[in-house]
Image (cartoon, rainbow, N blue to C red; front, top):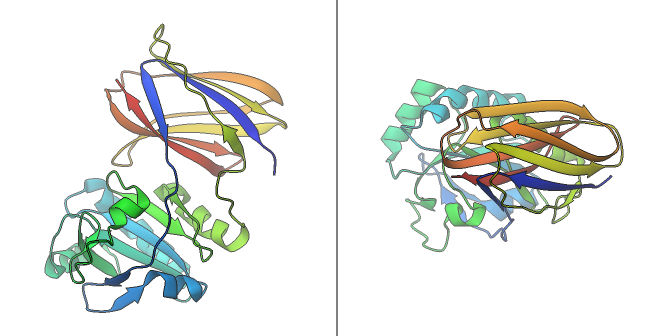
Length: 257
């Protein structure tokens, strides 16, 4: 595995990296009364995908059938769980209605900000454990208890990574980043080092998961620079995703102001 050293220069932009917190066990009861233990399922060599959604989230509704297809294509609960975590505090009947309208068949759970309403365990906030900032959000947890956030387009890649890759506690392809707060131009400037020729894609999403900006190019070995114009993107919080040779490497939360 090679390393990429990159420096991101964001004009009017501040970047904060996601950091993995410690995974802890929790018992979760779904809307049909079935109770699951996170660690028990992981110890059985199962992969768990947490699908954080809210009832009135339009992007959540649009993505639901795609998530269910991933669930079906991976054999249901044979080796992969997908658990739908409704975050708005709606009861079982509302979540059943959501599943019927938007085509989901995997287990779903009623929570208030990530706290499972049937169990009411105050220490079990999935929001806090996975640093959830909005919906939809997809977290893939491997049997070795390592987890990462993925977008809907790369969710299957995350599942495959659990099957094929031994995770380290830090991303092994990107080793460090530095933000320089310059304000000369209304653009994102990215500087990075790569040891080999690579196809690199930079994708900007809003916090509802809608793509706002995308840039793709092939880069030569050594130090490279590229620029992305904001294109009148409003101020707010966004996610900037880095994809190297078709593999998602890093996602960062960005405040544009």
